[in-house]
Image (cartoon, rainbow, N blue to C red; front, top):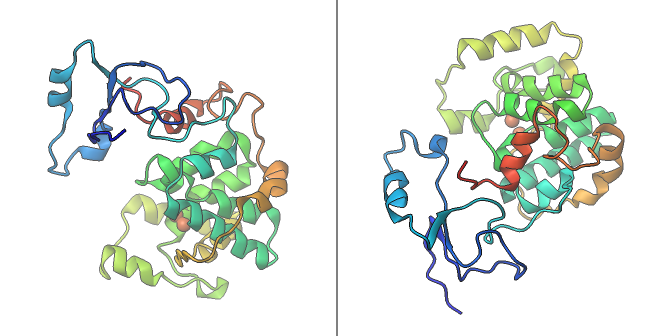
Length: 257
Ligand SMILES: [Fe+2]
Ligand SMILES: [Fe+2]
């Protein structure tokens, strides 16, 4: 059946994988996250969607038929496979694989695998901080620290360690970009920290190849993840941790409230 796809309305006729979905028989409206539209100049659909509310148009709560369904107790790699953008998926796996092939310690490999995790399906802005927060309850303090600080260290060369300012950053931000004071301070603090090199190594394996022909199988990291990432038995999002809501937001990114 052909479906008239509206960006913001999942039609009652969109049946996803065929198993039952919540709010069945009704059109489910998707309200974009405020942070995704503020300042963009694109029309915020909020008013229009509120006006469309009727018994056949409700706001989405729960599984979205347009997204792959997550297992009841999702694990780290489920988010990689079922939620992350292609670019984030490849980038994290390629970084971890490069560290693995270089013979790095497992803590560095895991830090590389997780370093941009918030860009996968949550938020880009201040991604080192968000990524560290997402994983902090499940990894060592050192890995979370390294993930947080890689954001700042990426802006500062350390030629002795083998890291130069990324060409990509000149292209991304313009050659005259100066990071703000809080990033400069985070870099200064990190330089004198005992875990500096763990974070610095993330920046070294933070490759921007985005090589579409290099497919890294996530399964090869299963054992390393098992040793360095404490998967909660209830699943990520359901363990009552201080960050469980962040994982749930990736499972159900369109919940109205
Ligand atoms: Fe990053
Ligand atoms: Fe990265």
